[in-house]
Image (cartoon, rainbow, N blue to C red; front, side, top):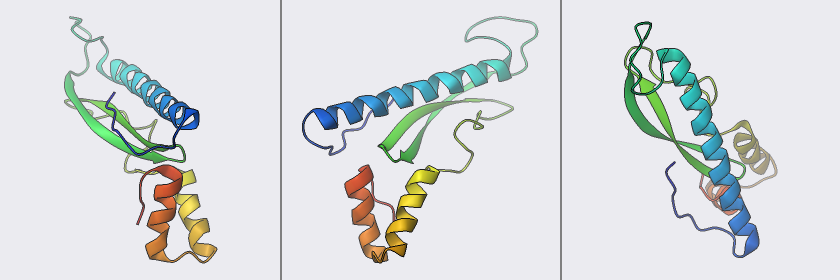
Amino acid sequence: MVTRNLPTKPGIQGDLLALFRGAIGLVLEVLLEQQVREMVGARRYERVGSRKDHLDGTYIRRELTSMGLIEMQVPSTRKQGSPLETIGRYERRTAEADGMTKVAYVKGVSTRDVRQVTEASMGEGVG
């Protein structure tokens, strides 16, 4: 899992938030590994005649959640690509994060100030 030093809330609350973000990222990475293993038909470095595909490395995917930015390593295969049923194909923000920006806009926050609101609440600005 890739970690990034973001300005967080001071004290125990910030530490717990960072711990939860790390745990969520780790769980997502384990789920993605499991899905890739099923797509390939074999574990890493395992020689099996019934192998369907081969691993083709990983890439970093960033997802903005209500708890903040989560970065994870997404494995991919040569033929089938990446298992993105778990996190969504083109989504970079969760529905909660999008909902927060919509509510702020409806409440009268200007589009310029929405970035400041999301930076304060989630640690990452959304324009």
